[in-house]
Length: 136
Image 1 (cartoon, rainbow, N blue to C red):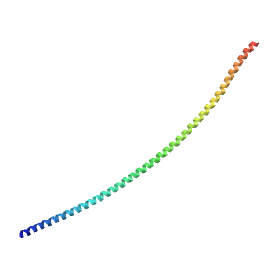
Image 2 (image 1 turned 90 degrees about the horizontal axis):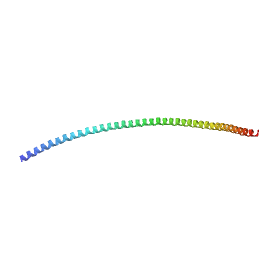
Image 3 (image 1 turned 45 degrees about the horizontal axis):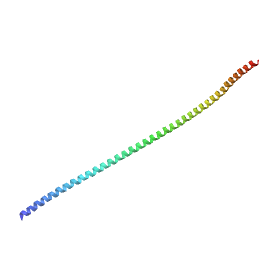
């Protein structure tokens, strides 16, 4: 019986040692979990700050693109206005050219009539001279 009591005492001692070891392991696990929680919180905060920075960058890019769109819009409006003015100038020049050609055609018709009248008059004079020669 003494041997059984000694074995039980040894087993109780080993059980107590195992319990203490498990308690230390449990404390270590709790410390590791705390460290991991703090690390995850730190990483979460860092990710939050990075997300904020990225969001601000995207907003800055959006603002810059908005300004560029405005500038391009102004430039295209300026080009449209300038091309409209050029179109008006070309239309005015074409209208002036057309009126100049019409005036030139009118002058050519008038000059052609004078030339034809002169030729007809000369032909009539020649014909009359031929008849007059025969009558005289």
